[in-house]
Length: 228
Image (cartoon, rainbow, N blue to C red; front, side):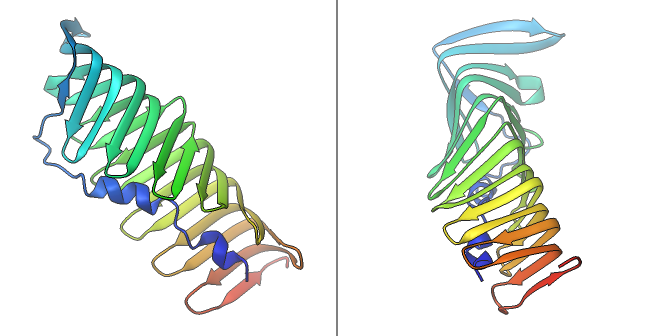
């Protein structure tokens, strides 16, 4: 069944795994260096405005931006302009990233791009937490790995179970065929895929309509149910 090829890749495992290796102690301060430094008071908070060749690091994460606004008391930084975050071979790019060094929460907006080995993903927004190892993307989400493409309105990934959950206008394409559904769950560790709601599978020889679809790579079991 062509669906084996569609979901086996677990596109967001690579992204979340890199952040899992970058975990840190909550007391560890974000380290930032730049050519220019200016101290200011913003909304009652003492902040540092850094510009010119901005470089930052926290745990195993490092990166760069055009500008950084650091709230040391909060251990938070707002990165602006050509933001890049690297971990080994992983690269994350966005115009703006807000990063909380205490909670490990990061928010990237206005267009997010991530690449890691043979996988890449783009979205309008991206949220991730270094401690829970959970990543969320929303807004025109598109992922690609070795010629297999998945698109959806929203996508969440849970690294501990290597589970991808996509919702809203889900579409998966490869040279073997196409699958569309309202929602899709793919568990890479068990090789299981579940699609629900207006499921349509098509290829050169097959056209299948159903409400619920299940496929297991390990057991070889494939089932379709309800309004088949």
